[in-house]
Image (cartoon, rainbow, N blue to C red; front, side, top):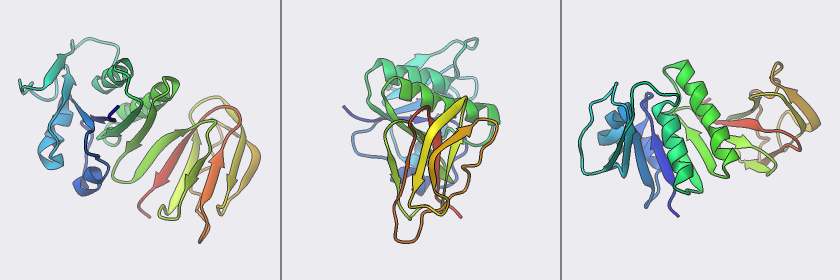
Length: 208
């Protein structure tokens, strides 16, 4: 099964970095104004989704789903639902963070939607890579200057961090006290992070 790549309309400044995430065979989905990135990314759409309130419908040969203007889901969230419906097991979101804060938070929440559906997902922008940390341990190598663990809701228990400047053992992180921000991988080490109960947002920064 190919990976789904959803491209939204948020700003992309470093197109070379964005292109570095793309793999041969990816199924590319453009969401409405995400189409403005098509030329710079050099990626032809396999699917276009949108209500076309921020970009005109290109009427291309690609499969196109035209959405109503009045709806519950943003174009990007609709695309996420389409990824789940079509049975993809992995998904990358580009052009989905930055600009409008409400859309950014909504797209970060979409990572939880994908996680709940069993789809491995990552959201990448010019500055970081974001993914959900659940029961499966994740490793972070020293190419990332900083990493953070953020609680999106509720109480997360059994948080463990090793191989980092600020280790944790069986800790609790609540949504109203975010003390897992801006950790660093120890020189020559690989940091390991895990939780026993709940889920966190793992943010790996690429720029100091």
